[in-house]
Image (cartoon, rainbow, N blue to C red; front, side, top):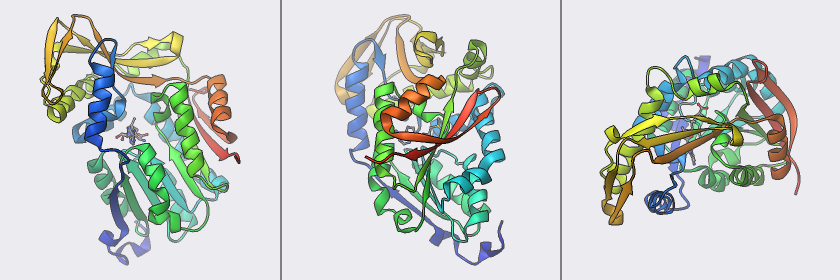
Length: 340
Ligand SMILES: C[S@@+](CC[C@H](N)C(=O)[O-])C[C@H]1O[C@@H](n2cnc3c(N)ncnc32)[C@H](O)[C@@H]1O
């Protein structure tokens, strides 16, 4: 804790705003209608993250098989000062920040550089933002934390109204945990383009991406022996039950997460163990799900160098620096937004 930790009351150093462009419940209904009524069934991964889902994701990060968090943390620990130096940032803005545990390396480096550091955290899960905020304020005595609760697009849309907009100097946008890999190429390109549109020319983006590696390592990471990823995947059904008045039976599904080489991605599946019917009260719908049928709950892309280059070109970013771990198993990219 820095020397002036007691000088500024904690409460005045934290704010949380809800930023939503669309009503989250209406959006879930629309996504459910679009993806779940008929096979092939799928949902966007953001619905995993109620308070329990966020805790389970945190527990996944601690499993021995889940190398992405470990490798990204090692890179951040080793290069945080260089990243802050290269970006010249005075403010950090993070999309999908979760617990912000790895971000602490960057915040420590930021605190070493600037007397009044600011951190703007965005996540769909309000509980995790508040918990992380409280922890960060205890550790970093001069840090101002502003949380934007809502999805990526809404946070980017409201960034200019947040106190971070008032801070002078360059900002470091962070998108870590390979969360960009949850999107197909066109959606990932659109999200990166949206990020670029929210950036000033002197801002930089730190993008963490998981890379291609041997199948056994990949599949072990998403099928951990303790069953934490399985519990995380199945928790989605509890979210749907409570949000939509559905009666999914979590015992009726198995977790399965194969590496699909053709698309260079892990796919998270819930596989129906039997023929079953699911009632969804809010939609007045009944799903007929056959034994063996799959609900795809997430994709997690593994990027080749070519795929990275293609995305950056598509979205108008130029790479300034790359830091890679363990024979390119995981990479951090410091990116400059191109004009236009
Ligand atoms: C895979 S976790 C990564 C967390 C953290 N960045 C890390 O690297 O450990 C994804 C995080 O993004 C949040 N999230 C998922 N979809 C989101 C969305 N569409 N908009 C905002 N946050 C989202 C989740 O709540 C979760 O905390």
